Image 1: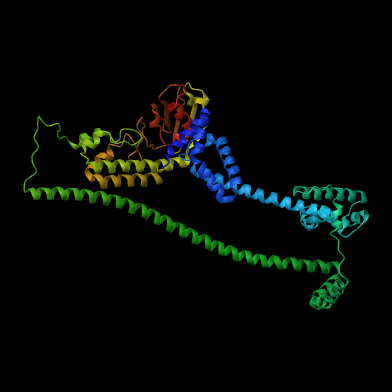
Image 2 (image 1 turned 180 degrees about the vertical axis):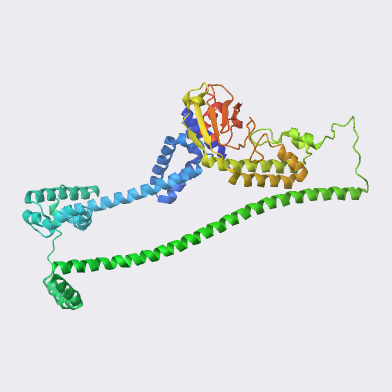
Length: 523
């Protein structure tokens, strides 16, 4: 099994320190994956070797951007597939050019004009030109008109027609050169020579035989046009107005119908959105009721078990008396509110709370897992909106700008935070029961906002109830901790030092180079 965390360490060592040993280890770890992927794509071992080399060259160039990845396998596979596809396309184009060059050489040896092979590309080349350039070449070479006739047909002088033809020939030659054919503008007219073919004499006769059918089919149109041409100017203007007004009237009624349909659709959309909002509100209500039912059910189960134990023992609940020799003493439950449930911002349960609530091993493990899942979901929501911003003068605190990294994390909002919080409290209630769950929840107040109205900030706090501005400062050489500060929109602030393992996961990808340097100090 491959150690996925080793890739990140090796890439960071190469990106930060330029370690060739680290890069060599990366190549040896993944070269089989890259080569096998390339071979599946191309089927050519030699070409696959070239692709493998190119992929690892790309890895070396992009190492600073990949230091945060736990494993490079996915990135290397995608990079290999893309490189292989590009090489296959390049190879196909190269073979096509070689085949075309071979055909041109064969034509030259056989006495045929090398430009004859360009004739099939002529129409595509003409379509690639602008309208005026294409018309100039069609008139000059395909209809064999003189420059004077070309100018007359295009409404320009003969000299302007000559310049336009020359310009169009240069662009035509450039089209051929882009496709691997060496063609000068002066020789481009020779391509048209092989493109001219006289139509067979019978074809004209066949075309003429179709005229009666066309005339009969268009007789009514011709009659209308004939009478239209005989109208006076006033009559013509009136007819044009009728012709213009007809489509406008039709368009007016069509748009009116569309407007009515759009209004109906908007009304249906509004009704649908209202129903969706009502369903969402009902879902939130049911979710809250479900969490409460789970908590009540757990409390009832524990109470029933206690009553059953008393019945089975056939004895009353013993009265507590102080035992001088016992390491434990009973305390009022209100006293437990003075203890913290979580000891660090990473969500580790405080040993005092697990002992005071007399958690079993299973309860402790399940509660710790619920805390970690809550942190993971909260971090996912925060990561969507986290932004690294340039440091300002107030952010530096005696550090240089290039030694300070600043992040803004907007508050995710009550609409998303409250359901996340209630799901977490409901899960804790199902594990510990209503009484102990309430004490545990209250003991979380120093670590997270237990209600939407909570405010404040501390060094162990991981969940904030407002937007924050976080700053991390590059440690000095040989230092074992990073300096970290946080301020909130309500004016609260906090400054502390963090060990590398205590840096919040939300910021770790952005300071990976600092963490690697701390773990592997330069001798």
